[in-house]
Image 1 (cartoon, helix red, strand yellow):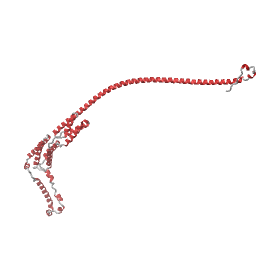
Image 2: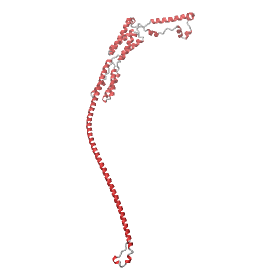
Image 3: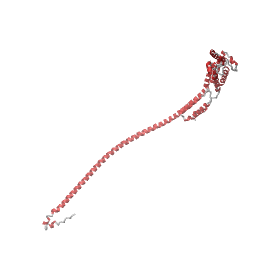
Image 4: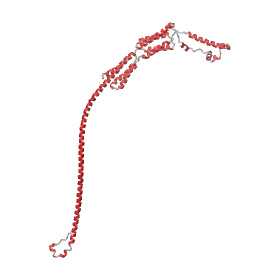
Length: 385
């Protein structure tokens, strides 16, 4: 920086050089003004910058104040909303606590009711099991009585099957032992050979219906003889059936007979053959052990057939009553009567004898099987074990 020349003291230099100092004053004043203006400008610029900075700072402060106010308002609103929500949450919590207390009370009531219902269901289940056991036991005992009366195992078999189907639908594990016992008794009852009274009575009824058509020894079955003896054929057919050698060689009589006599000879042969067949049907040779069978009168034949029917019906009634001794006695008497008085070679007689013998063989006394295993299992189930 240029240094300004030092000036002499104004009091001493003025009288000596007045003429020299006068032209140098304007040159010294110009730089000072320049610097003054520069200083003023700098100060002004600094002031403007300072004012701008102050203004900007004020604007920022104002904006910050507004932002703070806005955020404070938002926080106040949020705080109020939070208070409202907290109040609502408290109210909800109180309501929830009230509902929970009510639900706890109801749950305790439901628990008590559930326990009571379970006890009731168990009691009903036990009662139902007991009812089923009692019903099956009663049904089996009734079936045993029916089987004893009818002499057939079918009622007992049907009762066992119905009991098994009922237990299968019920599906109670506690009664599985009863089902196994029913299966064992069912197999045992089916394996026992029981008297089929129904089929035996049907056979006896068939024999009773056949009695009126049985041919007697004194009155042979003409239908059987007619079926056994073929009808007489004409002479021309008889000649046609002869062997070829016999047909080619005619008899001596026919060869010697004149032609007009041959038709008469053929008619005579046919007539003689028919007479011979009728004569053979009138005479029958047979060995008879009981001669009284050939001496029956027509009235006696009627009573014979009726007595045979009564004996067969008596055997039928005894069979229904399971009196097998009487059945055997009546059937044996019927067999003796048929073999003595009726034709044993007739087909109807043989069929009647066959049916009576079948009934006689099957009408035997047999012990009725008892479902002891099932009854024991039912007693165990009824005792609750």
